[in-house]
Image (cartoon, rainbow over all chains, first blue to last red; front, top):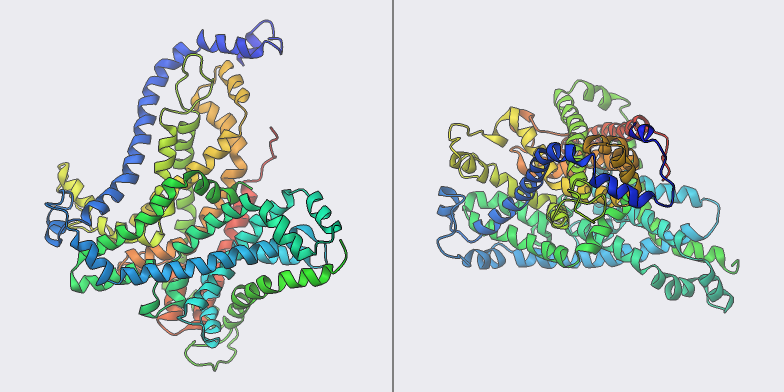
Length: 307
Length: 308
């Protein structure tokens, strides 16, 4: 609207400087007043939300150092002294050490498996033309939008019949299978962006298809593998639904189910401080890892949705 | 590149595809088949019963309750989460005051700090978040009611998860809390790719912040918003709502089934009540709801793609 009132259109070359003088001159004065109230409001909202995110986490950390009576009687008071015994109780008596170990084993196995199998499938689907290519691709992609719980009912019996129920390796195989849709989706797009010439040159030089893949293409795909690896690491480390259904043996519990079980059983024992210590213990590694690898984590988690 | 091509393709696809077919595709197909049987899950014997399970489902008041709650999850959660996230990310990226000599469009001070902090809940397991808030909601010793007492609202002490009319909203608030940060970061990345001269032009035309947002930012961000919408809806119908409802509410499923959702009902029918066939029937209904939701969002949100 305003531009039609301006008599002479600004020549293209001098557009930027004129724009700057203009914003400094006329309109901002009016905007400043309106902007002032808005600024206070929106800044307030931003700070409020940051507060709301941080407070529950700080509350949990604080509570993990208190004894049980303090937890119940004064939830927001600082601990009278740092009860480190909560932490040692959680680590040994409440089996947190076992849950950590199980989780590390399951996630290590399934993360490596997911990346290897996912990149193999994605490479073939991205780079080779063959009948059924599209069908297989969409078969993988479809897995992203289907409610997993529907498949879990028969899956329980499939896994049981194979003797894989309540085993670490069974859980690893299932984790890999359910991580493949996104991994294949992401890596197929990634392999398509890589130049074909390098692989062709290697092939002309006599390298086999698989050698080309492992020695040329995989190193080139490293950024994509890191992104999707972080995505899968967090997803698998935090997984709750799959182990709840497929992993009912108390000795094989992973962190998330272990804590939920602990919460249920601590209700009888009344050891809430130990439970909070366990919760914080489980939160800290991922939060620290996130703060250190912040850029990569954000890239990995948002990459898929931006494609 | 023809030499040994097919052998290579088969060799590379066999393992991933086999695993995927066995653990994902095959159970899905079986599920649909089982929904027409009377399989209990406890014994291997079953017989076909036609549409009996579906008829039973339509007469099951708990199913209708769970469907209603799942629909509320799928409609309310994305709207609230995405609106909040759009507001925050606009403020963080575009809402800043113009500083002399600086770029025309800037974020508020401390924008990267906000992005880091808001993202915290996203890296935590939803199970851990649910446990934490189950304690925070505790009516007597929880953090929330204790704050209310502290600021002089001692008369307002809701039962939160124990109150049938409040429990569902209390659970949803936790999902909003844990996902807003993800969308803030996602939308920020999208906003960063909008060229600054578009904002410059808008400012020249005297556009305020609201019209800048609705005329420039939102239309150019639409694709991201839409895919975020579908993503959030699928989460709200599936795994995330299962975790929060199962962990946080009593029963689980809440007082008087006031928080039960379809995905939890499937789980309970299959693994608690030994009615696997009926569970898959509800699962099929959940599948239909999920696909209908995705199709609806994609269709309603269809716009001319803007090139910039």
